Length: 420
Image (tube, rainbow, N blue to C red; front, side, top):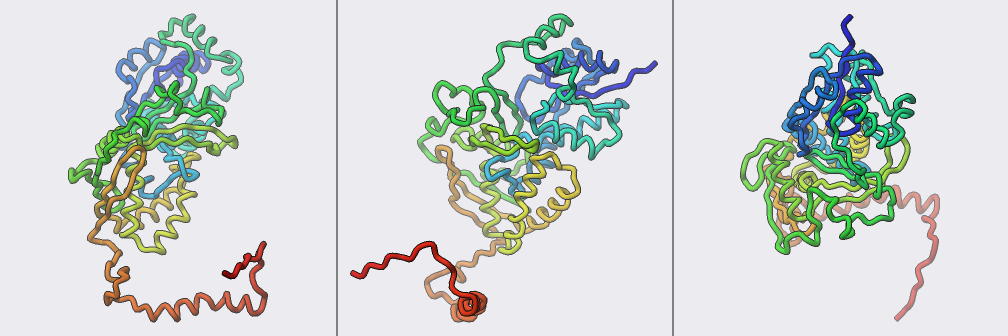
């Protein structure tokens, strides 16, 4: 009798190594493992051999870097999406792509289920499973950390190590790091362990080695560096005059941001599952890209269009954070966002210095900025200052009527007047 197949998102670490064997035995299934290369720069070589020795019947390692930047990161940058005003959604935006590839493998392998190793307290379980639901509602989802028998068997790391020894699973498990880490092309995140205390300062010298992708601003060069980013319809297409594909744009900006200590944030965020969580993030290239994109918009986007789009940023960011990338409302918002970017083309010049991204100029053939209109030097233009009299009078009409008929606004204190 042919066994069912399960496609497991696999990294080759302790947790997923355990899951290969445990799922195989628990569900009497063939396990196909899958590793996604989204620019994490971790060791991906040898995973196929390791997975098969652990019990997998087949393995896939897919390079998703170009697709990740072009079809996920860049659309999000066009939306200026930042969760709760600080988080550039680095982990969040990778999950729907990984889930999509996992589903494609499941279809090819004729699998009946997909599995992941996300914990029952985090956001990733939502991101993976909401994506599975949108793309393959017929497939069974196996989430071991939400299963009583799995948690009973593996209450801690030591039980996992013992399980591997018993089943001849080769893992190099050492003492647990004082924090957890997740990395891709857009960012690297740190959470849990020593970071669970929101009063702990992760930038102290004793914790300096935690940061992998950025210098500390104190150690960054004492000389500022200038960089020019060229945009076309909201996407960065060139850096310092050199045309590049999206993934190379991000790689280039990552190097610059890393060098100048740009992109570190330390936040307490609100998880989708209800709890607050403290995270430390490094997003060097993404921070530069998002800042430059906004600067490009300032001279090319109509005011009311920009203000309307800006009201949608928190909702768009929340959808990405919570895992609704493949939901119809995100797709509809994306259509609006992309239309708003039709004129966002031109060049932004930035100055990078010790953790700071400073705008040093912007220009565009589609610029709505008119020096004659903005000038304070009495230059003739389409703007007639006399027109402001009627404009202000009409804007003030409701305020005058309120004061006359309903009374003046209330003040908590009267200003102390001292005559000199």
